[in-house]
Length: 265
Length: 309
Ligand code: SF4
Ligand code: SF4
Ligand code: SF4
Image 1 (cartoon, rainbow over the protein chains, first blue to last red):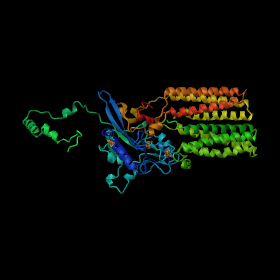
Image 2 (image 1 turned 30 degrees about the vertical axis):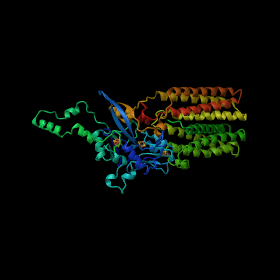
Image 3 (image 1 turned 135 degrees about the vertical axis):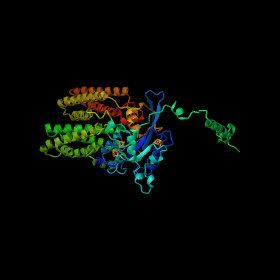
């Protein structure tokens, strides 16, 4: 049914920390790897090694440059983008077949690959560009919040998380129930001022973004944090130890791997 | 938005077909039975033929045409589903009306009631088509009160010139139809001008900073694309025709409509001119529909580098 279910108490979603995301693409590749064999699979690529590759991915990581007021240098913000599992998603209500639906029990928005006719209208209705059409399968693909992992009883409890969350090396992705005010993710949103994307569209995204933290001034903060030598006996002891223990330049180099490209022997 | 030819063909062909169908119903109400069986059948076959070609072309562009029947199920929420339902329902009164009006079945008393139902259903179907677009908040130029009127006025104008052309061919060409179709074409031209004025005036007040929420920090620009080759979103939503090019095509639509009106008026002297008028009016409708897509900017293009939407 593409009419929306009554709002669920449970609102599963992601909280993405724009402060710690380093843009490594680990989440996108692990998403692809899991989901190409999962509920939405296959996620077909065409011409993957050619000059004009294209393919279906459920998660994309953008890079934006932000020039802040009063700063001499801009900063880079890496920005993962996937389905936000909106509370009032027109991608669901426009679907003529009922293939696009929102689950009543936990709010996950899914496409049924067995009934989708591939009309693409849902992708037009999504403000976030979160739905990608699979030309080879003739159906629409989107983030499933790894519905086939998070309830999977064959997994250890700690593995019942979306693939992207498991893969993120910096812990920039958090999964949980945003309908529960006491959950870790809800608290994180409250603490860090997590925000909605394009609230003016009225889709009420469940996923939240944590804004990058205010930047420290790179020219002096670090230097102040370091203790300054004060000429005490301790200082002199450390300086002596430092000198004795540091490998001499020649021997240090001998221990380094050879990058010159020559093969020995 | 990427202007897919199947969708342009579908909306203009079926629009013209429903416009013609509605006008034939009016003819039935005002004149009773068709002047000849051949004329009645030809007109009905053209109307239902255009509708059917349009519906088939919209079905063929689906990823799974064999599942198209499923699209009738979600009429409670989806305008696309409502359009499908309305389109199929319209066939019933239309076919019976066509049989009675053309004289295939002799039941003159039924012409008027059947005509009313047919005309209403035809217009409801066009309205559903327009609503698919006008209810999408993600595309500012479609989410506009004029969108519905553009679809309805072009359906009626193209339907009227086709009707004029058919009557010209059958030699029962009434002067009234010349004026009537000219007025409808002029109306379509005026409405599309108002539509363009409205979308040009609408502020494009969403920026990349709004889309990403990073505008709270400062000025946002794109630093790195998430992928090395364009993806579905960029190909489908990223297409926007250049402003200069669009301005030329808009002029082309208006010039074609004006010429079609002049040709239609000259058909008072030389009836075959109505055929040329028809060709020009259909051409104007196709170009207008192409522009409707090509000028539409999707809000998701902000994530991919568009400055404003
Ligand atoms: S992000 Fe897009 S696809 Fe996901 S629920 Fe919202 S509108 Fe639908
Ligand atoms: S592409 Fe599939 S899921 Fe999307 S609106 Fe069409 S039928 Fe529904
Ligand atoms: S895996 Fe984590 S750090 Fe890497 S791009 Fe994804 S969210 Fe960012």
